[in-house]
Amino acid sequence: MSYPFSAYGQRIWLWAAAVCALPCAASSAFGATVVTLPRVDISTAQEDASLADSLLSASTVDKASARMSRLSSPDAASLFRNQPGFSSYGGGRLANLPVLNGMADDRVATVVDGVRINPACPNHMNPALSYIDPDSVESATSVAGLTSVSNGGDSLGGTIDVERADPRFARHGKILFTGRARGTYRSNAGGYSAAGSMTVANDTFSLRYNASYDQSGNYSGGGGIGQVGSTEYLRYTHDVTLGVHKKNHLLTLTFGQQDAPREGFANQYMDMTNNRSTYVNGKYVGDFDWGTLEARGHWQRITHAMNMLDDKGGHTATKGMPMNDDQRSAGYSIKATLPLGHQHTLRLGAPLTMRG
Ligand SMILES: [Cu+2]
Image 1 (cartoon, protein in one colour):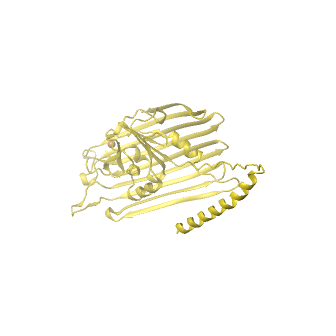
Image 2 (cartoon, helix red, strand yellow):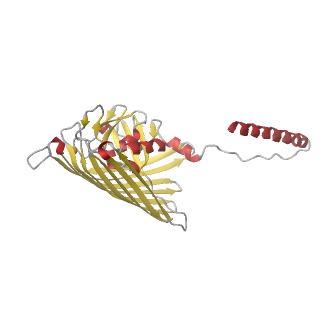
Image 3 (tube, helix red, strand yellow):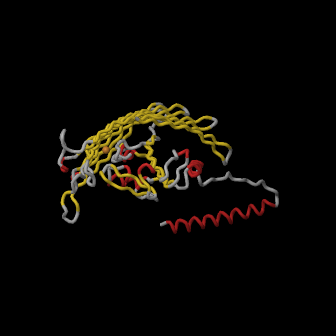
């Protein structure tokens, strides 16, 4: 279809050139003025900036593969499965541990919404990516290899960085009411997931409610091996995001709670019997004449309990393998980005995280 069109286009171009050549040739003798058309840039300034800002070893999950991952797994770690240098090792179905270039665990910094999260579980059975449902993730970036200090640094293997979407606002004088919903069902183990989000906003304030629910029983293995024990899970998440936008300033506050009342670990002699994360996360971004200022603050409490689920014999006060943990963390980070001419950018920042 495109061939005849382009041939036709070429012919028009030849005609135009021929028609133009005659008056041009004729007018040059009379000293006509030369008209210079404005320059047309085929790349936008925004793309240039993001290329310059990102590390060469960073890769971002594209929208199409993120959509496929969400349909096939409730684990946010699966978003990265096609990224270079990435692999993962699994225990529970909600909580695969990310591996970058063969290095894992504390060697990989996992940053969720600007907060570097360490697993509350001493056995690291609830990794940081299990604290965000895949539908809430708007941008997912992995840096395999050394990470720059401005991206957190201090991680030999690399960095996994996921961030939820900024709040949306309406145009001036309008009200925005928007949302999305997704549901999936798997016949094996009767696994189903549902996730949704709703936003009400004007041009200054935005309120978003986000929820997700994931549940599955023990699945059946192929080749007639029957049911595989301790592969069940249940998790639900609620969060509310409040956004305030005024001229060059954007303030975002997210309050949320996630519960994982059960998650079996087929390869361990214990399962997760309760994991609750309650959190507040704030972000301010301001554009000024001198550059950009970004400030973040967070508080999170994780109560974590592990023991044996029924298919490992269950647990009572005198039987099982209890492991309980209660962790709080709080922190802030401030980053200033100052453009210094065309080729240089100065970044200043200071983060602090406390755990107890
Ligand atoms: Cu644990």
